[in-house]
Length: 124
Image (cartoon, rainbow, N blue to C red; front, side, top):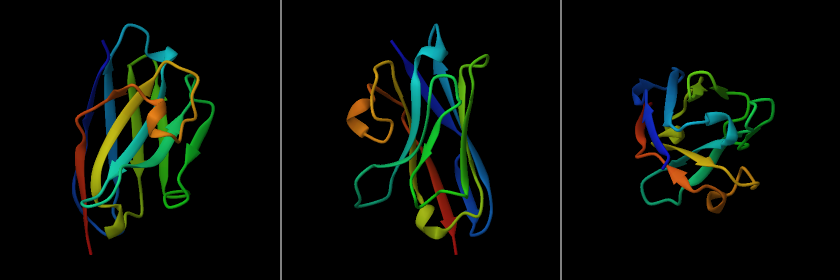
């Protein structure tokens, strides 16, 4: 059983930064492809960023490219999302997700395990 716990969310002014963490309770973290998704009120959950098992390959949604950076530390069973130049439209609940299958990182259906989410609120 995979358990994912996000942390690091909060309230920040536009232009500010936050760093989200996702801690995984797994035996071998490096076998999982990982991703960040977000869901704003009244909207569907959307892909934000994804990272390969080794961390070498990453993918970003166009809306966050150049502002957000996804990374992972397989020795600590943890994934990160560094969010800079935050905008009010980044306000959402952010979820981390994991998959041990060969899947498209951007697809929600490719992930089997999800965290409970952490709220990020960006004020204007």
